Length: 144
Picture 1 (cartoon, rainbow, N blue to C red):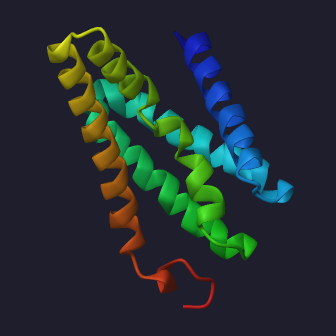
Picture 2 (picture 1 turned 60 degrees about the vertical axis):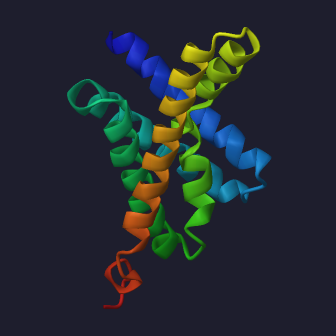
């Protein structure tokens, strides 16, 4: 179990780094973005068995955005440099794929179930982003 989770974390880190390169994030921020994405995935994996997938998406997206805002102040760059790639591992891509697959196979009940699950995950991610961005910027800055 620990080896599988370590593999997932490494995949999240390297996937986030690759996504940051794809989005042309400056190279000096790519590894840090990878750490943010890996940290978000750790929180997702630890929270999923306790509180379910949707709440885990919410909590992990909050952590990704929180650390992105902290790092943005420390590194003097926009928070989106870390946030957009850092959220990459949380995107419910396989669930969307399954929804479309079942839709094409004319299995409407399974398509609806997967589509609904993907939508709930996406909304949880968005709510996590909004909640953390409502925290005043002065709480993140060095000079309060």
